[in-house]
Image 1 (cartoon, rainbow, N blue to C red):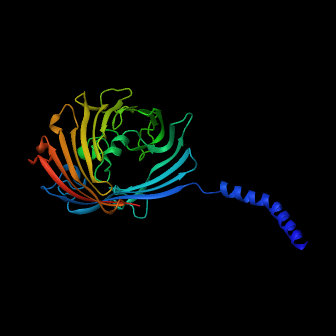
Image 2 (image 1 turned 90 degrees about the vertical axis):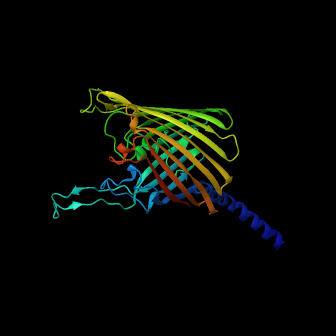
Length: 389
């Protein structure tokens, strides 16, 4: 009898505890933190000029006769936090850092140290690069909305196939670094993008941005519009067409333009049908009312072909690239080209890579590119250290 009574009491207690256990279980499920990731990526170079002096674009602006040779330099350091809130929502916060000077040639006024000139600050300074919300399956399945400080549509397809951002930027992204000629392109801006996969082989995307780029506040009422279409007729081969357009504020020093226009047209092609091999090309032209010589408008253009082949996947690959630059379509003496070749080697783990690479610059008119000196080419060696964790 006692055993029977004890079992009855235990059963009654279990029944009474069941709601509480259920509530605790449901609470645990609803309070489980969403997936969160932290990551960092770092590019460190050792640079040495194999030719005399080195390229014009590597001169420090403060001294036109000195060159940044035989040095270690951190080019970029990224730190990224991502929070996948649920199957459709994701949040990203990315900090970037480079050696851009914060203060240059500023003289203090109205203070106890008035009249004192401040030198430039070359510390590796962090700044916000991405700060956005991503909403997948927005309105319809396979439609993605991004809002905030986001990636633009300009570079991404070519950059993904190049896959060596640690070695060099892609053609349009690095155009101004190589030529010193602006094409008003940026990797991030404040605004919104909408991407939609209409079918397996056809994708569309549109972007609406300030146009001032992520590093500047908006300065006018005009906005930049970007359009992109990607077509994959057969597996392993795709073509991407891109264009952007934005009005600018009038510039008093130029011929009358009520709302000067600027536009970029770009086409990429990617061949990935052979295992471990990627071959790609990109072409662009930048047309702007702001680019004029004696009242005649000129374009800035360029094209690039590159390839990489993995001898041992995730361990060792070869890469090579050729870029052609036309900073002024009316002055072809400014034309220049760049060849990049090297190795991408992960000796122990993919998070640490050694990437020895050589850059061959060629100038059509070397005298104009080198302050009167006759020099038509430059060669630069880089030992790039890629770190990620």
